[in-house]
Length: 281
Image (cartoon, rainbow, N blue to C red; front, side, top):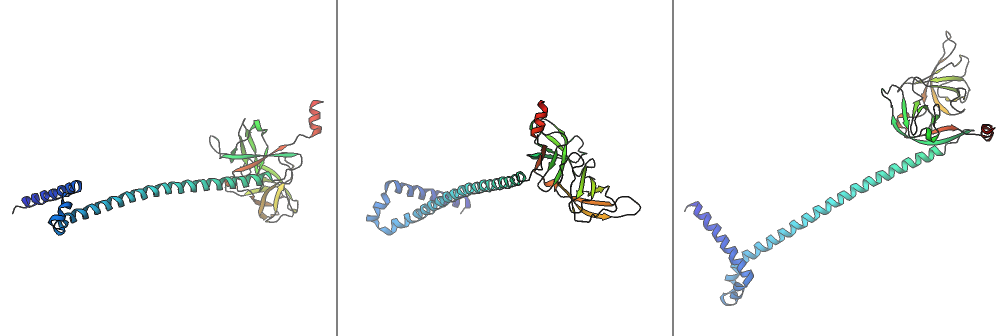
């Protein structure tokens, strides 16, 4: 027999069976006939249709269930991402709050008052030659040139240029930076020079007879007219004495991890009562 003809008869038979089954579902004729013609014959006709119906219905139910589960999973994933983002945000806020509280707990030097500021940029300027940071305080907040800038670890630098609402801070590590210091333990005096990013600081004008050893902390002496006395600046890392010169060769490392700075303190001279009276006399 021609295969096409066989296929035709099979398809036609299938359609006939489905039509018969559907017609019985609507009319119940074959079901009623089973009481007269025998259950087996009618059951043989209806059983495949029932199986197909149950199978198709179960498949549809499972499909709809899977679709629902997929949607629920997508919703749960979105909620988990939102919760993770919220947790990260809360953690960042908590860490920032802890840093600010630590800054605000820094003791003010006598005749000075402190104000917190946020670092908003690093190495700013047309050529970015200077070692600088940008903070969100300017002249409107009382910041001006040579205002000392520090963190809880020590000196960061001084304000180099102040705008109305922002200011550029010249860092301790910049080659144009100079800070008068003394050894915290042995009181050996010198001047800290910046040598650029990633380089050690150089301490000049330390006399050969001075007692200064690696590990000693250098603090501001107050002799440069910029920084108050006693602020931590650097830790001595190397000391070399040469008889051919008048001064020791001293190197030091900054105490502040400048690339990681996010908040700083500005130190402003407090107006004493006698100073305010003098302004009006």
